[in-house]
Amino acid sequence: MLKGIEATSRLLLVLVLLLILVLPAIIGATPGIAGIVATAVLELLLGLVRLAQGKRTEDTLFS
Figure (tube, rainbow, N blue to C red):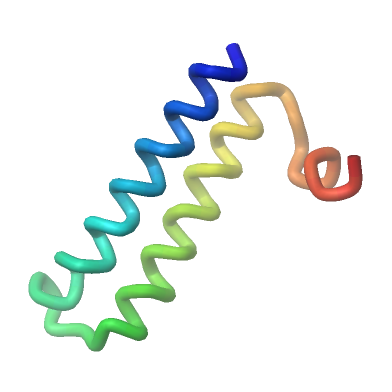
């Protein structure tokens, strides 16, 4: 199970990095704004992965 989550996390990281590179061209945003949006998307997706594992964010932060 852990290997699957690690692979999912890596895939999400790659997708977000690609989003940072492509988003400014798509919407005409500055790279800083694209980075903020991509970081928010990454946090949302990682939160969903934690939720799928049955963990809350507080559990992973303070364990």
